[in-house]
Amino acid sequence: MSALDRILGPRVSQEELAAQPQLYRRPKALFSAAAVLLVGSLLLPYWVLRLDAPQFPDGLTITAFVNRLEGDVVEIEGLNHYVGLGSFDDGAVFERSIAIAAILMLAGLLVAALYIHSRWVLVLALPALLFPLIFVVDLQYWLWTYGHSLDSAAPLADAVGEFTPPIFGPATIAQFETLALPGLGFILALLASGLVAAGLIYHRRAYKPLVEAAVSQRREQAA
Image (cartoon, rainbow, N blue to C red; front, side):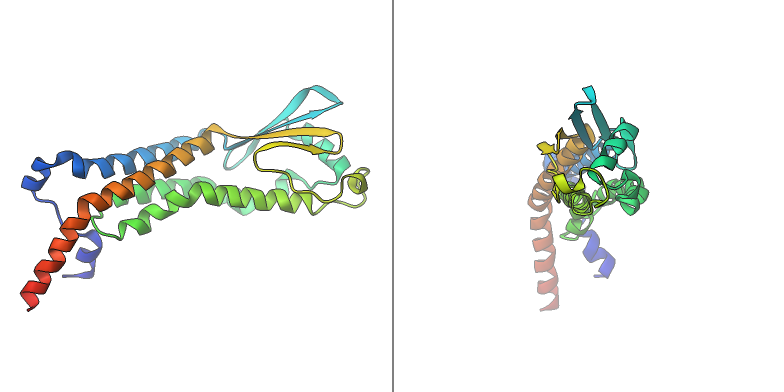
């Protein structure tokens, strides 16, 4: 058996497919749905930050997509200047530059996983499974970096001191109140991760017996 055959795994006969169609369709459907959700998440925000300040009684909001910021960016940048926070333009430059291509690649790997009937499917599905966690870890890193790189010359830098804004939930920074929430895009990515996890479970149930049968047959032929 060639290396490619080992990666692709055993083929399902028409008789077996007809006898248990849902067994083999379920993991494919789950991987396909996860790929669609990931692509759809590109159109939606991943993170939303609301800030309440005395100067802005109606509040300010920043909406973060995977590659850009929208909303009251200029106004919040002005407030950040007093605290000593850096510009949003300086954060996650690399991540924002590759985000769309990377997420499309994750969806493409899931589509490729539809044709893999061996344990190698994990290599293709794992990036999409871990993507929400990677996003959260990277976001926390940048929030920590901003909170620990204050400009000492800023008027409120000494009063605020170093801090780490939470990824999600409320926080108080000087006289400003903030509330960070997950965006619909992140929720879709999280749902996609759950579908991938379920797809891997059903994939194992469907193809593990076929793989074991193929291995057993090769051993008998070699004996």
